[in-house]
Image (cartoon, rainbow, N blue to C red; front, side, top):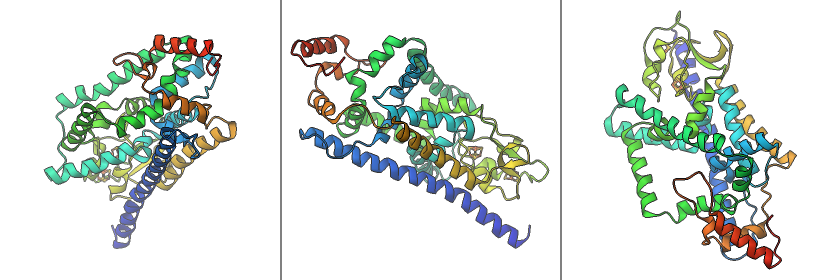
Amino acid sequence: MSRAETFINKLKQADIQLYRKLVQYLFLATVVLIGIKFTLFVNQLENGMVPTVTRPPGIEAFLPISSLISLKYWLVTGIFNPIHPSGLIIFLMALVTAVFLKRGFCSWVCPFGLLTEYLNRLHRMLFRKNVTVPPWLDYPLRSLKYLLLAFFLWAIVLKMNAAALDYFIYSPYNMVADIKMLYFFTNITPFAFWVLMALVVLSILVRNFWCRYLCPYGALLGILSFLSILKVHRNTETCTNCQKCTRTCPVDIKVHKTTRVISDECHACLKCVAVCPEKDTLYISALRRKGILKPLAYAVMICLLFAGGSLIGRVTGYWQTGISNHEYLFHVKNLDMPFYQHNRGQVPTYNKDAWLRMMQKMRESGDQRYP
Ligand code: SF4
Ligand code: SF4
């Protein structure tokens, strides 16, 4: 390989990961802005004000269970419910990404994916190399995220009928799920704090601990990514078997041994493509050696998908929640009431009796705020 080719290859390598980092930081900046705006919104509610700050709809991206319930409700009843509509749109965009662009959501969009990459760096600083979990332990641990996913699918897709879905979606618990999620972090309990700390420590000791072993969202995207026609391909004729691709793969896929990466763990991070020193030997495409997708095109597509989803939601009126600021104020004032509490260990639900009693009182007093 000539010096010029080596230089161009190095530039290409830098470019691929530069695009990915730019996209990751773009989404991280969006998430931070959403977090700040939502905190200000809730602060105003706590001070008894009808908020002047607009609630950022993107906060619903952090309510995947509510979104899964909304998705089933939509499929069963044809109603795109107005409680957390942007959550459902973002959830749908993540599913579409998996079907068309593999698990790119995990390594291009998700802020936890970015955090994991930094924790992986700490892992390398600590051990001075990538420590891999032996297969006899790795495979059972990897099944944990599928068990969690199976639980949610069983509890929601199989067990909840239209009435139960309706009941949950319009419940006060679901209406304030975003506020309760914020309180989970701002008023964190000692138990939750130590669980989070344990996850951080485990993620430093074991690379990708959360994403690889526990994240049910990643499990769902991993299954759907099998459908993706896009795959990382290896040209065996030009491959020199240097194994750089395998050494750099963050999820330990033996890239140098395969001609096509077919794995639920592949995040489409394109690190293997970036590091390969041989021109067009590793590439992402739908077909072998045809229609090679340039990393820049991949970056643009993933951004356009989410921007397009948000735009469609805004244009069709399914982006902003149907809950009014006055209703939010009512909910925040009453958050200590039992029907806002989550029944631990059960299907996501709320205290039905307390809520029915409350509704009865409201009806008796002539308050028709709820159906
Ligand atoms: S980095 Fe490229 S050349 Fe080296 S083993 Fe992987 S595919 Fe082959
Ligand atoms: S196979 Fe390549 S694209 Fe897939 S996770 Fe490994 S390094 Fe990333």
